Length: 94
Image (cartoon, rainbow, N blue to C red):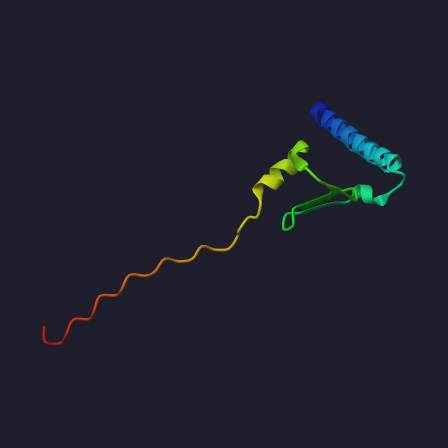
């Protein structure tokens, strides 16, 4: 294995371990409340719930503020414009 691969694996493994440790510390700090791992963003009624607690004003939380600014996104297909009238058929006397 090359030195770059070893370094990459060591750094990524360290970051994964740090993430697990921080998640465990958050779980312990919450008093072993499993709601710490839940998040819900419902833009239909403008409610954001993090860790079982509703967030009143998401402007201080960067990713949530960006999502709140998006609002409702319409993903339906656009309607087709009216087709022009077809030319009339030539009469047989012409």
